[in-house]
Image (cartoon, rainbow, N blue to C red; front, top):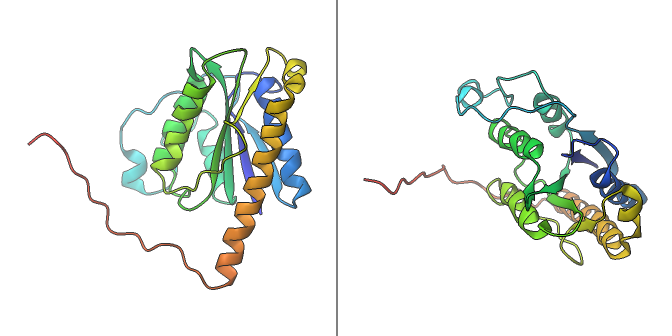
Length: 208
């Protein structure tokens, strides 16, 4: 079993990475392979709503000059996801927001794969950013993995984040819970429990 952990911070080895590493180490302890992926330090364009990914049904975004399609290739081979972001103005980073808009719109590999979000902040705004990231899961038929507290760490540097003992414990608990749920899903498959049968999608507009 493998989990893709996406670092949506401009800093490859900063506070968000520190929190993701704590999750990753716990996954490894439970025989789940972690793969930490940094979205990169370059700008990531937002979704242009061109619909090319839906028309081609390729599972790829038409724009290939950043890290989105690289991550989508990885997403096909994993069993779960953790998305991490620093808190910018009480929201997720612009990079991870643009990334996830295209990642989820172009990708068709998320259903019934567990997802979790973690956020890193100096002081405030964490719950708003955390709520923002969780919305991607609830529109994609993904089970959400929880922890003993909201998945957040506090600190301005990786060293300060490590001093947030409750935050670090929350990350470890998240890793344990992710591993447990993945094993439960695998056990269900082995017992012959099939995934839910989806109805054809109904779309209702409210303006007549």
